[in-house]
Image (cartoon, rainbow, N blue to C red; front, side, top):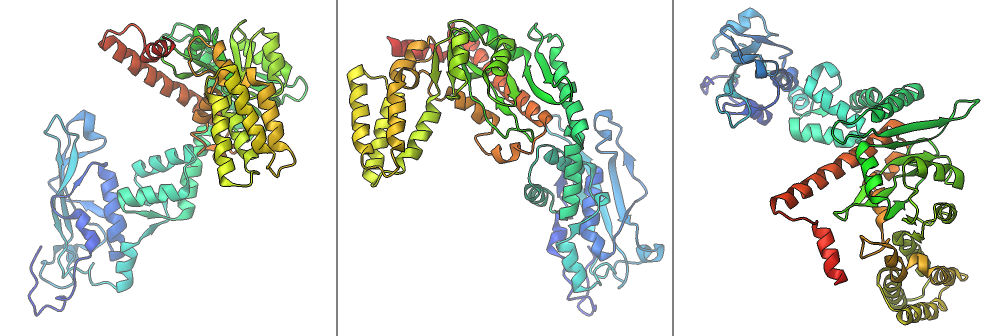
Length: 506
C-alpha cells in the first residue's frame, strides 16, 4: 500500500478494522464465488458494487477442483469506478486503487485446497475511503436483504437448516460467526422455508406424496441385509383419510426376527407430527445390550384391534416374549392375545411417583419417599424387603395433602408389583439383568432427541417423522458396526454386555 505524506488531506483516514479479513496471507477454504460475494458485501457501502477480473488470470486445469476454484491465480479490480479513476496513481487523491490478488494453494496432497490473499491494496487516497461516516457503519454492520448477495454455499446451508427446522436465530448467528455476515429476518425466513418445502412439501398433498414415495422404497430388496423392509398405509374406504401406517427398515426386520422372541418394548406418544395420531417406535434388546429399533407406527388411538394388527405386521407378536409397555390400557389385553407376560416400563411409574410425592409436607419426607420408591422399582429384593418398603411408603403417605393420590399410587405399585418392580420384572428376561427399567422410554427419548425436539415435532409432516426414524436406525447401525469391529479386532466371541451380565449372574 502506498505511503501518504503528512501534508496529504487524507492523513487522518484509517483503514477500517473489518478490512483485515482480506489482508495479505489470509486464507479461504470456501468457493471462489463466495469470497467474491463476501468482498462486495463489505466494500459495497464504499462504492465497490462489483469486481472485474484483471488481465493475466490463469485458469485451474485440475478437474476435481476447477468447479469450486475456476482460477489458479487472478486479480480483482473495482468494476464500479471509471477507467480514469482506476488508472490514476495511488498517491493522487480520488484514485480508485483497489486491487486484490489471489493464489490457489493446492500442492500438498495431505491438505485441502484453499485460496490465499497475495495482495490487498486500497490506498488511503482512494475515493472509496472518502465516504461518509454513515457508509462506514453500514459496511461494518451490513444487513443482507437480497439472496443475490449470498453465495450458493450459504444458500444451501440455510436451506438445509430450514429442512431440519433450525431456528432463524441459530441460522443468523451461525452465518455471522462463520462468515461475518448478517441476514435480514425476511431473507432468512424465505430461504429456510424454501428448504423445508423442497424437502417435505409445500402443502399437504406434496408432503403426503413425499412420505409415501420414501416409504415405498423400503419394500425394495436390500442388497446389504438380504431382506425387504416394510411399509404400508391404511385409509378410510370412503373419504380416503389416512387412518394409520407402519414402516420397518430392513435392519429392523432382522432385529425383530432375531430378538423379539425375548422381549418387545413399546411406548407411544401424542404430538409427534401435525397429525393427531399416537406414535409408537417399538424396540428390542440386541446382543450388545442396546435398545434396538424394530419399526415405527402411527394410529389414531391406542386401541386393541389396530395396535395388535400392527404388532403382527411388524413380527412382534412372538408367543412367550415379554411385552413391556408404558402402561397404556390396551396393552394388557394385547399381551394376553399374544400369550405374552406383560410388565410396565419403570421410568413412567417413577416419574408419576415423583409427581404424587410433591404433596408431602417436608423435604425430609420427600427425600425418604424418593429413596423408597427407587428401591422398590429398581432394586431386586426378597419379598419381605419389598413388602417392608411399601409399608414405609404408606406411613409417609399419611401426611400427604393430596386427597389420597399418593396412597393410590402406592396401592397400584404394590398390587401390580409383578408388572412394575424389578424384584419380579427381572424374572422375565434372559438378556437384561435390570428388567424393564426404562427401555421403552429410551427409544422414545431418541426419537424426541432427549426431549429437545418435542415442541417442534407437533409441526412435523409425516415425512419428517419418517426421516427422523430412519436417522435413528442409521445411528444405531453405525454404533453396532463399531462394536462388532471392536469384537473382531480383539477376537472376542461375546459382547461386553453379555459378558458383564454373565458376571452379574454368577
